[in-house]
Image (cartoon, rainbow, N blue to C red; front, side, top):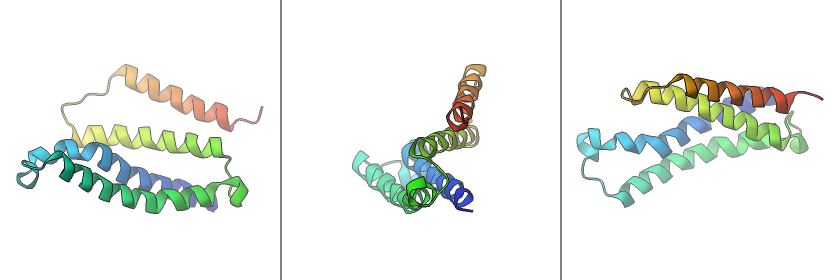
Length: 123
């Protein structure tokens, strides 16, 4: 159950972080965001990142083997990266219609999935 909680919390955490890192690129398309300065955008992004940490820290604590979880530190990081790229691909398709994901992006993502396999495999 801790593994499921870890993955769920890392997914929620990454949603907030993706919006903090890339969502501000869409602000100028809205009336309220057209005249925002860089400092305002940074503060909004930090506010989103706060919620990211509310899920990321408990996810890693619940999932870390030394704290009773099922994952090693390297496995936790690998899971987080795979989730990040998955959510980023969805985010790009949904919010940035002009961005196209090409075959090379999909191959790269496939290699990351392969990395997950290699890291989790008991050799």
